[in-house]
Image (cartoon, rainbow, N blue to C red; front, top):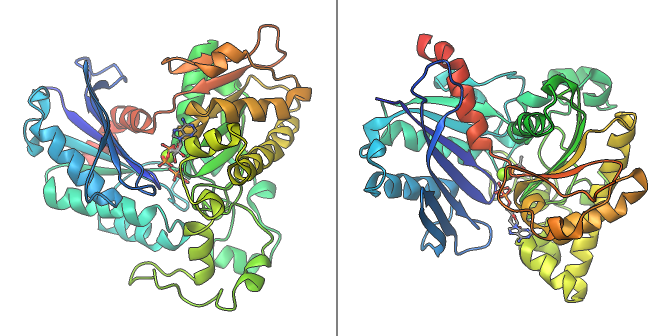
Length: 422
Ligand SMILES: Nc1ncnc2c1ncn2[C@@H]1O[C@H](COP(=O)(O)OP(=O)(O)O)[C@@H](O)[C@H]1O
Ligand SMILES: CC(=O)OP(=O)(O)O
Ligand SMILES: [Mg+2]
């Protein structure tokens, strides 16, 4: 019997779960996809279900009373076990491994079995990823109740960035306090960047350790990554996923003094604080009540792009801010790679689906040698990697359908001995 792997990606606006069977040959490291379920729009209710199993597809089915990542997980688990076309997962006991995307893993350089020590370590990091670690742990908890026989493994968004050198990850602040409190750039979206390196290596037929990429993961949270020789050299997120680019509800980088002029209660505990989550008013405002939501009233960048196209001033401002902030990273990363760039990559919900945004960003950096084929950009198709550059462009621009769930499931197959031995 093949072993069933449930790969769970709790994003800030979605839960994506893929079901895999281990391959028949133990030497193969490619998991076999059985079904994929996504509950999205958690920040723009009602949430919607997308489901694919072979030819069976459910698209944008509105869901009632699904408001959190934990609700989404439970809904999907129920859906999967009730799907008669998925006999491999007829009962919960069929699931052997559950992989969890955990955004902040602190110093963890690689995946970890979740035991009580790792659980509490991840919990202690929740204050540094207030939109992510808590929701991921709520799913881990639900798994331990609903699937007590499954092995829980955490994959960290931060692990990919442990290659960032000291002069880039160090903040210019008092180093005694910085070291004591572990205040440094960590960086996130690393599971996605790792997938991008694999996928671009296969597509360009180049070894991964020779790839130089300027990668943009643009979803509810957005970041840029400068990938040199297949490893992270720099990234736009920092100590927390708030730094760098703006997002659905996040401000991205702002003048650090701004909050003290915005509200007198910046340093007060937020009402959203709980026993395990200690955040200030400032952190709540900048993480949950800023970004596209504060500028436009919607967190749906598809709607913002449409409004921009129709000349709506408010939507246009949000769209132009995003393009400006993204281009602020592309050129510096291009120079960090000394112009030896294999590709500019767009990934994430907006990167993959937002053709107008890609067009505007690439126009903004065209002097570097990037140019798009308008037709391919408007409709990149369903492949994992699509080259959307204009013929003759000096540098390639690619759209990568990133798949954090697959990257984690591959990790399970590669590291199975480590997990089974523990
Ligand atoms: N057609 C579209 N054009 C631009 N952006 C889109 C489109 N469809 C969805 N999006 C954006 O993609 C975002 C979700 O990205 P995703 O990477 O799946 O998010 P998460 O951070 O939850 O993992 C949504 O918030 C929405 O703004
Ligand atoms: C790290 C992060 O911001 O993740 P997401 O985009 O999935 O919210
Ligand atoms: Mg995501």
